[in-house]
Amino acid sequence: MWSLYPETNDTVPSLVVCASLVENLVNQAALCRTCEVLGVNRLILPELDGSWEFRKISASAQQWQTLDYCPPDQLQGWLAQQQDYTRIALTANSQAQSLTRHAFAARTLLVLGRELTGIPTEIEAQCQATLTIPQYGRVESLNVHTAAAISIYEYNRHWR
Amino acid sequence: MWSLYPETNDTVPSLVVCASLVENLVNQAALCRTCEVLGVNRLILPELDGSWEFRKISASAQQWQTLDYCPPDQLQGWLAQQQDYTRIALTANSQAQSLTRHAFAARTLLVLGRELTGIPTEIEAQCQATLTIPQYGRVESLNVHTAAAISIYEYNRHWR
Image 1 (cartoon, rainbow over the protein chains, first blue to last red):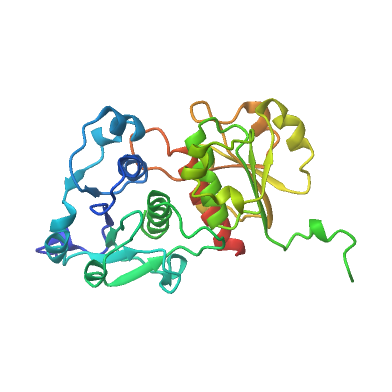
Image 2 (spheres, rainbow over the protein chains, first blue to last red; image 1 turned 90 degrees about the horizontal axis):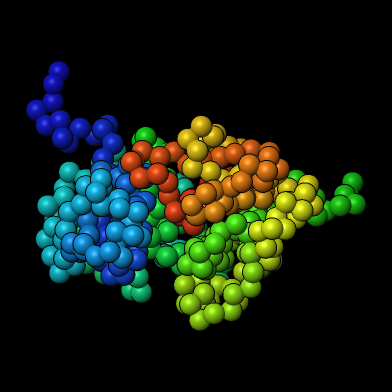
């Protein structure tokens, strides 16, 4: 039987990475490259950046990567509209569930935090799970782009 | 029975990341942070870099990360001495074995390539396996630091 809503089919992989809170241009552009290479369906950036630096760091991936824009002050409202995705907050908090043990939903929206302060409580509250990457060192956390790359790879293990 | 050579014990995790060929300071410093956070036992850089920029990008991880140095022109000789490690070349070549299917040895030495030209043939020939990260986009490859971070994470899934 045909589904009336094929776009919400829960076995068709669709990964959205939300970098609305990511502030650093280098991280945004690096994310763009990584998302394109790893097959991310949509990347959300805080705003359009057409600079030479962005294009250089992203290896011109912005030509191919589907991008949307959401300024951080509109993120709460935007997230509230994403009910057909399982929303995952990525954090450096070691109390969160390990990324290695998470069974990703096919339709996953991965929310990244600010470089210094992470994800605000009210945004995390809009997510169904909070994940962390197991860490073994003294430095507080991975860079946000690095953590996102690892998480996308883990999603791909499940669904690509 | 006690082993006379506990340092070659093949069930004790030991991961060495060799970035001797990585040319870009930003990538070297980012690797330093990632290696420290993910528990890499030793990182090999081409040379000592005590600059402010390195410390900033690495989040001062060079304070805690065990570092060794090997200039690229000495890499072949150095690798020949690492017989007690399984040497793995990381490449963007899609013909290589997928990272997701590799059973890592406890004692693994991960060799990274140059940003633009990858790993020279004679260095790859010194490795027992060549691995690649599955890619789905049009951009040619992941950044070398990003690819290394994903590979270290995958090693940790097996051994940490």
